[in-house]
Length: 132
Image (cartoon, rainbow, N blue to C red; front, side, top):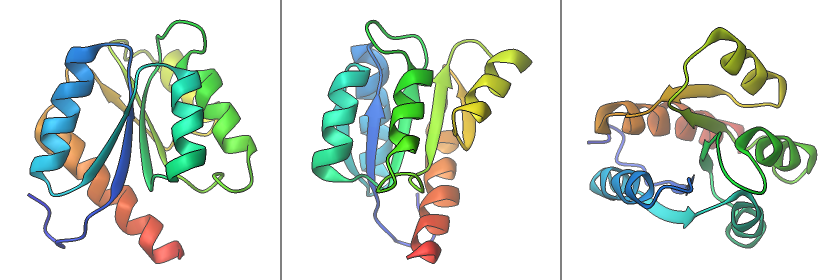
């Protein structure tokens, strides 16, 4: 569970219902508010409407992939400081480097564990609170 007791608003973007639901369960068990999006366009609307404090974003999605989604979020001054953690089943150096180029802060390989997810929220959620 979370050690600080802080609750964060987290957006999970993935075209896989299974991944979205798993992440939602893990994050809610950690005491966080969870928003779900099933593609990049849905994610952009939810980022704008709900202003999450952290975004987990799948890379391989139809229409708008995770790299494009992250780049668009980071180009908006309102959300440039919102941490984005990429989710992917690929863990190659090129994939990670490309993620960094579009502004993601971290890279989690699927399948992720509850601990990995909550640790990322702790790390970036606390950094976000410190920036406020």
